[in-house]
Length: 139
Image 1 (tube, helix red, strand yellow):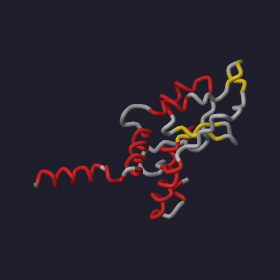
Image 2: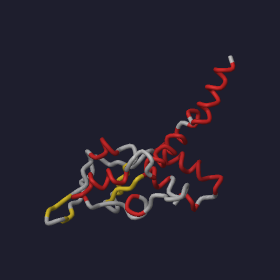
Image 3: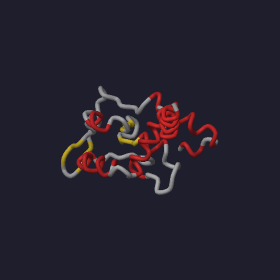
Image 4: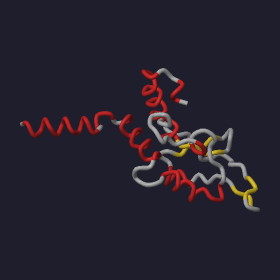
């Protein structure tokens, strides 16, 4: 977990992860699991809709949320469980569960996603935008 790093290094570690992006193997032979009486497997087409955050572990055959992992301990009500610690692999209910994980605009996931964007583009943070707007109004 990011919280295991010294506080002054945490944003550097997060930035490193963001530069590399989520691990998204596409040509891997995804293993099948018997779920609900049918063989199921991870579908790499899910990267198309959830790719900004979705990370697949070949070793564990599970999906993680990179954004929630990076900012899991950054606030109260932080995301944990399926998409941060253990990974998610119940492929027969994947879309429903992915959508529930993403949640509404103010969900823990979307807050972590905004934190990732702010860290990725620090010059476009709200403070910088506010300062820039203030400078323009003074002219």
